Image 1 (tube, helix red, strand yellow):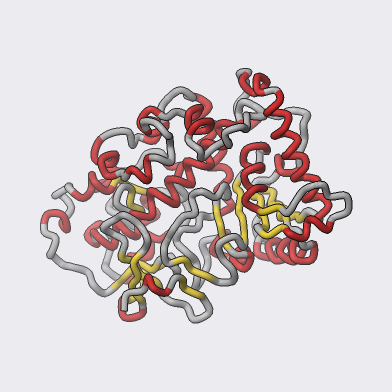
Image 2: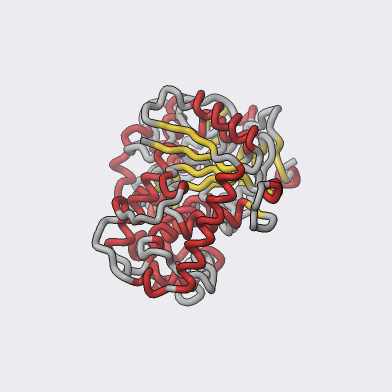
Length: 412
């Protein structure tokens, strides 16, 4: 059972969104879509605040050890968000002040996302209309890492088939995960952290040393800790990094630490580390650099096998798997797609393009970040993303009904 919950301060809009999603997901058995009324939403926020206040007044209660697995741990303090596998939150919640007897101030979806991540057991959090309106593509490729939502998009994008299934056409940003398997990945990551809580995070990810670690910038590593990042464990990340609990807040239950860390670190990998494609590289960007790794011919169809969505087996991606398996990023659940450690591959002269960079150069196809597909180069447009990477130059298909911003990122 996958439970989708929509929270908005406008009842008609949330009901319309719920109906649209129910239609799109009708073929998926076991998926339910519900929307809270503004009154129910306001009460849910108040419930999260009560957990926050209770944790501040009794921090010792959250330090007790729990022997039950994270995925089955429950208590009698029920909240509607606890059962939500995918939680949609509107950003602009000004109209909540019109709810009868509402005691809060003017809310923002970002504050509610923080409370939801830290004081509920919800799965994936999606905030809409915070950074984007309508069909918009962000040419900076910024991941909005400071937001506690796992994904930030527009309300129009919620009903994009490509957010839910692999059988899409047209506009579909490559940075999006497939939402229907996102919450189970986060749960597995949290269980993994709970099994070894004192181990440094970079050790758990296999990124604490070697060629990959040497490519990290200070800006990337400082997300993990205010101190030496290679020593940061879950406790330090959650309480001291500034990217977990706020300075005065405390855990409301012990396992909340692992849920917070799994979601925040997964977003860091997915939306800050991976986009540079210079520490970790995913399949289509790898194919773009090393066409010899493609099985079969050099057709558009063969290349597009590497664009399969989700954390697929390497065999499904149409790659010469044996040539690159030694460099695969082993912590699969932390990303929504397969990835490899780029510095290891970049020096492997068994790969033809490394041995002879100018041999059989492929110039006819380009991977499009707004379509999650390869297209012929005469049909695409080049831009420069906002990142510290030698691979900042990327391509988009440029759909006529999509707004691309900021336009200054396009190369003339």
